[in-house]
Length: 113
Image (tube, helix red, strand yellow):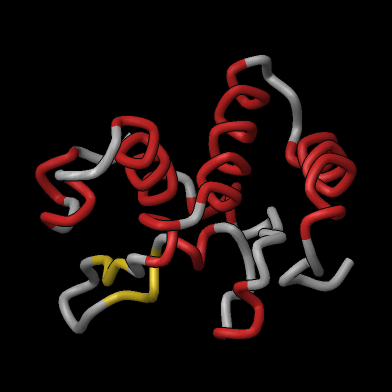
């Protein structure tokens, strides 16, 4: 998990589950870039669950955060599920299948299959 001190003030002031999701996202791009989101955020250009938290990098290589997930329980729930399944040592493919099965009813995936 990335240190909380590296997070924007809005994240630091957020609920613990949101803080944890941002910390996990910042430290696990390799996983979350392979996991879709189903909150409808594809309409704003998000291409994975990771994009709900991180908008890119600045010139110094530091992360630029997207504050979208601060107000979106679907984004955070997906990340919390990923965290739980990784702790159970499930691989990314199995996690993707579980996320698709659980969240597809909420809206379109923001990433192609």
